[in-house]
Each structure stands twice: as structure tokens, then as C-alpha cells.
Image 1 (spheres, rainbow, N blue to C red):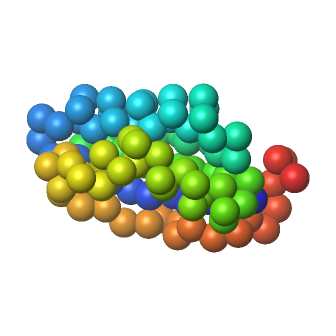
Image 2: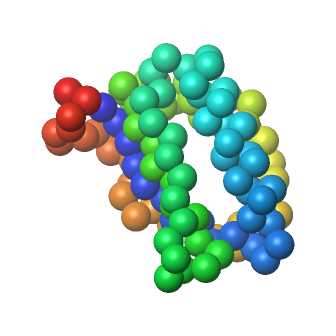
Length: 101
């Protein structure tokens, strides 16, 4: 399995638009990407304006297919209008162990 966890700082007033792009990406992945296992999004109460995104794929190749989906491409085009910045909490890498194994 291949995955990662990112932390996004959303621009003021852009939360709903950002979440809609993430929801769209999740729908595209669910419907059209059999190699996408998880696209999960969280907020943490103590971090207003921050959204975490976790992604898991069957393989690196499945991830490469995912980043070509229309929602990911759209995020690449408009990301700077929605987020102030982002960092990897866990960079994309191969999973050492999982309940999905």
C-alpha cells in the first residue's frame, strides 16, 4: 500500500470551497479509481482553519493514476486561491503494515 498525510492551512472564507474540491476528488476516486483505497479528511478542534487529508492507494502506480483525475488537476489550478500553505505530516511512502494487507 502507498499513502500519505497532508496538513492544509485554508485561507479565510475558503473552507467550504476547499472541502467541495476534496469531496469531488473523493467521489471521482471512489467511482473511477479502483486502486484508491482511502481519501479521508479531518479537522482538529484546536486548529481552526486547518484541514488534514489522508490518502491510501494499492500501489504507487495507483497514486500516479489518481493525480491525473480531474479534481486533482483542478486543485492544482486553484489550490493557491484556497490554501495559504500545506505540509506533509507523512510524505507519500510505502506502508510498512496495515489492516488492509
